Length: 159
Length: 449
Image (cartoon, rainbow over all chains, first blue to last red; front, top):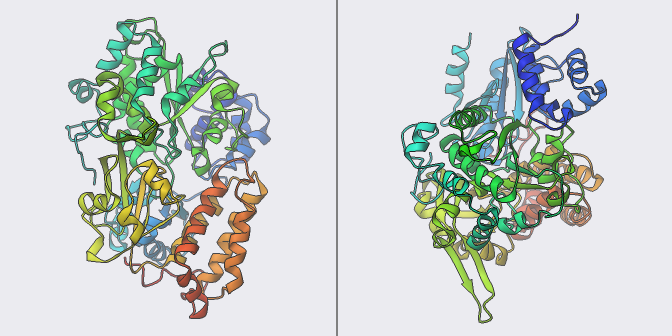
C-alpha cells in the first residue's frame, strides 16, 4: 500500500516547506502531519514517505522521530491517556490517578487495551503544575480538580 | 488560577477574550510597534532602550537581553533570525503558557520590535508539542496579525518585512536548551551543540541568531513604548560606592506557584519582594496551615532552599545567588513539613534521567545511576556509602558535558542531600517506603493528596 497525503494535507505541507530556508527544517512538522493523517502513529512506510517528500534518507526520518516522545512509532489506541508524574503533579496525587487507570483499564502504563480503545502512558512535566494532576486524552488537557471519580466521568463520556 | 496585578505582562489578562485581536487593539497593543516602524526609529535606538532597561532573560539564565542582541556581528552578510523559546518544560514552570493563552499579541508585538531592532526578517516561535491548544491560539493570533498588515512583506505599511512561524516541538525537555532548540528547528534530533560558537554568530542554519524566552520578549513593547525608566521603576537596582550595580533585578516577573500552597497559579510580581511574602501574600501561604519545609525557587533544576533560608531570601537574581540557588524560570514549588525529601529527589531524578538526550556519556549514564541509587534508597535499601557515591557521580557529571542538563540534575541533588542529610540517612537506617508488587514505589502516605 502506498501512503499519500490528501490534497489538503499536501497543501499544508507545501506551505510548511515554504516557511523555512532549508527543506529539512520541515521534518518535525511533516512528521506531525503524517502522524495525524496516517492513523495516529508513524509506521515505517509513513516515515519513508515523509523522508521522500523532503529528499532525506528514510533513516533520517526514523532517527529524528525516535528521539521525540510524542511521535508514536507503534500503533496506539483510539484514545491515548497520558498522566503527568513529575513532582508538582505527583504531590497533587498523580500516582493515584495512574493506579486508578491501571486498575480500571486492566493494563499497566505503556500498554493498549485489547479492544484497541485506550493506550495508557505517563508523561513528564506538562506545565500544568498549578492545576495538577493533569491527564491528556489525545493531547487535550484535563486538569484542575482531577480525581479518580472525575476520570471515570470523563472516560464514560468518550464514544 | 491566573491572577492579574496590572503590572507589565499581565495587565491585559483580565480583559474579556484577552487573546483576540479585537481585545488587543482595544488595549493598545501593536501601537508601539506601529509607531516605531512608521516613524522609522533607528533600530539601534530600540536596542539601547532595551539595554538601559536592564531586562534580563526570563528563561532561566538571566542573561542581559540587550547585551545578547548586541552580540550579533555587524559585518555578517547572512540573514539574521529571532527565535522565541516557548518550549516551556522545566518542572514547576507554566508562565509562558499563561502568556500564550492570555495575551499572545503582546508576545507578537515584542517579536516585531525585537526583529526590527536586530534586523531579522524571519522569526520562529518554538512551542512545545504538548501545547497544541496554545499553538492554535498563537497561530490564530499570527494569522490575524497578517490580516491586519502587521506582519508580512510590509509590516504596518513600511518597507520592513517580517514572517513569524510557529514550530511545534514533540516532547523533548532538552529542546528548551537554546542550541538543542536550534538543532531541533533544523529538523534534527534535539542535541545541544558545543558553545562557542554561540548562536549570535552561528545559530539557526549557521546564521546569526538571537534566542529569547517568551516572557523576555513580551516585556519589550512596554520598554520601547514607555521607556527604559518606566520598566526599571519596577524591581530593585542598587549601586555601590564605585557606581557598580550590586543588585540588578529590574522589572517584574511572572512567578508560578505549585505544590503545597493554598493558591497555586501564575502571578506577576515586582522583583525584589521577599520570597516568604510572595508565598504568604500571593499564594495564601502553605496549604492547610502546615509548616514550610523547603522551597524550590525557580524550577526543579535550582538548588532547594530550606524554610529558614526561604524566610530571608529576596526575589532578585543576586539574593538567590547569595543563597546558593537561582531564580531560574520562576517555577516555585513549595514543600510542606510532611514531604518526603528522598521521594521528591527520586521523582526529579527520574525526570532528568528520562530527559537526558544521550549525547554525552557522563549525563546519559550519570542521571540514570543517580535515579537508580535514589530508587534503592527510597525503598530502604541504601547505605551510607551511597551518599558518597552520589556526590562522586555528581562530580563526574558537572562541567563534563556539552550542555547544562547534567548540572541541572546534580545541583538539586547536592542541595537535597546537603540540607536534608538526616532524612536520607533515616531512610536506610529505619527502612524506606513500601513498594508494590511490581517493585514500583508507592506514593508515601506522607505526601498529602
